[in-house]
Length: 581
Image (cartoon, rainbow, N blue to C red; front, side):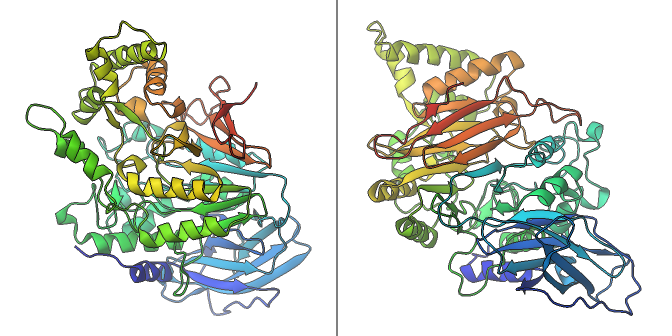
């Protein structure tokens, strides 16, 4: 199996960068007069990677026939929606070699300003997009919509549509699983309702994605979705990948969803990431750029958003509980503890970890925010629950969860009648999800220790689980370091489906898990939605917003389940608080 190096990532980025040009002002627009092909902008427009003085613009132009010859594409940037005050223009080429995608890195813009942009060919014009640069200097507030995990066959992208209605956003932060690599065939993941909803993939892409052609076509399908297009047209995206942009439960040299008969994983991975760089509004990585996919976005003196890759560059293969159970069903606890806390196990990898420590050290912003994929909070649950989950013995899970929660409640109340056996049931605990930071505990301690040593106000943003969470982040000594806000999914099913919970069991399961996991402050197990995160000098606040369905085009916001948490800055604060209603 091919081991990927940093140079491989640079190669994937360079191959996938499309017709990237840097725009510094007004220029003439020249089209090929001999080009008699008709063209269409079928995938809308997008912007991303905003800076104080620039932003990346994206589109794709589809010619009437497949030609090797490039298509001339012009762009215009204006300060008004009527495009009367043009400040940037120019021409780029959409090439077949880059799937006819185009990126323009517009520079020389003013900070904290709204801009409008569009593309055109000799016979067609794109829709107009709206974008915004990052603010500089003193900043009163920053508002980010946080999303993750959009499974096309699972349901409609109502969450994207709802966010596109907002007029108060600085950016959308997408934490990965922008696409999924599975097919939409009956029995495939989350595809049970795909046919009824009209969300199956066409025959030429209803496969597990393996090749560059496969991944490109899947982005083509996703970006044809009207709700996703509407959101991209409205606001810049700040993105990072997770596992399903390549394959399920990916790590640096393999993935759960990659088999030996599917070819070399390194080749599959590079082709998947090439398609990502082609289709996403993200700057390509060039030789000499030490940040790679991990990079910082500075919102004046208020927020430094550090985007991290916890999947593909430095992650060791996740541990598996089944490797630590003996034939009698007991857990080899000593070996497990040694392995899960090993200093040799990496998640970020040495290069990225040192970069993060340095970036936080140099930062003078009020809030240090980590935009990344997986839960960082400790999620220790009683071992008997973990055994049931690992062996997929879900039938008795709700009852066991209820019993254990009751025992934990009695312990917290100081009940002296608890027996040694009852205490053992709740105190014999271990991490629930080894694919999260719980499976890479040493690097988590390094990150938390860095924030503590530097006296930083730390907020971690997470996705991946398809559920909404809020965690207090404590180090191994139990010291409060920061907080974690985790968003639900756009459409992917959550723990309610994985644990096979009935509708009337969800509330009890949420209460039980929240009681058993000491650092967990909030959990929503069964709803799809997004997270609005607002930063001011006085607080960082998360508001979870949920739609009542993704199985129909008509939907509403479920105000009964909307929840908010906040954290205040400074030593002695930095812990979750409920927001007064």
